[in-house]
Image (cartoon, rainbow over all chains, first blue to last red; front, top):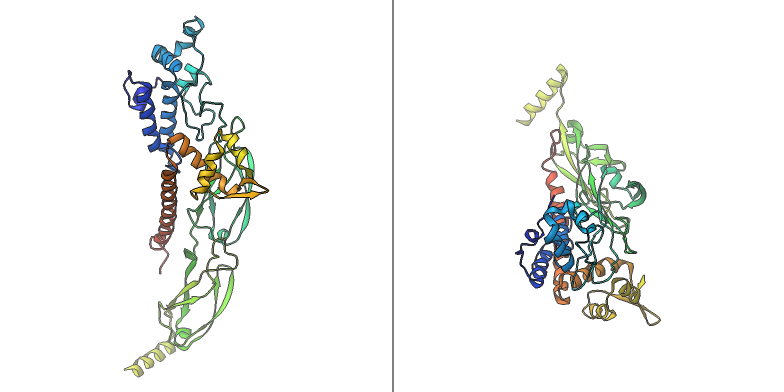
Length: 296
Length: 98
């Protein structure tokens, strides 16, 4: 598909080199991936303006583009017929180097210019590899322990350590595990975003956990001892007499591990749900009735 | 660690650029026997600074502001993620009573 590079940069076909440069810079300041982290649209547009600039800022490429651009499918034939003698020149050009990897120029560009793209700061540039993004799904119980996982990405196995206490939607960077650099440039980075599934019994808010515990009426009224589940084991709890339905208690240090703070934990908040007895016997109903009268 | 000279050679930049970044407090260098080294932890930010400076023509003071704003943006995104997680407490599927 023909790409109108003038339109991409928003300049006139008669634009001077300076006008092209300044239009490109203006757009680049808006769309540069360093200024738009994790914005795929901006990255795509940035690649488009980069490509447009690659062509329009190079007098030879621009000449060829103006001459054959719309008939790009036949450009090779024209070239073979000796109508195009130009050699690639890098005079006065500058193309950004961010994640410009192979295959990032359009088919249109590749057909017209082959693999001539990307001269960077006037010399052969070392391209940094592309950054990769991936999602990793964990259970809440997985996220509460530091553990290792092996990921397979583009055929490569990567072993990563996931620190306990990682948050849902938190992203960590694994340096050097992105796309391979070109011309000796460094590899890109791998960004992993963690998606932590909800737990059926525990809710998490930061480092604190919340749960509800059913309490039978008799223990709630008279007090006693119960065993409750925490995320990593059972604990015994003393229940005060006359504990109200919906009352909350805090178990200090029984919450979620604090990210990258070994030995530190949040708290576990328990809400008691008092269970009203059902299927009462006649005798029990009598006793409740007596209780009720004694209360009046 | 990578020596500052080697980094400059790779990126086709002058060593004086690294010196001015150090002077302005944008990066920290380690000195070993009169050779200046860049720590691995600083490499990512330094590469970003190089791109902003050479690709976008942003001066060092401007880069300082940009880096600070990007950091604030990242902090806010993290905060949004935390708040979304808290919001989930109130938007859990049925079966959760609290």
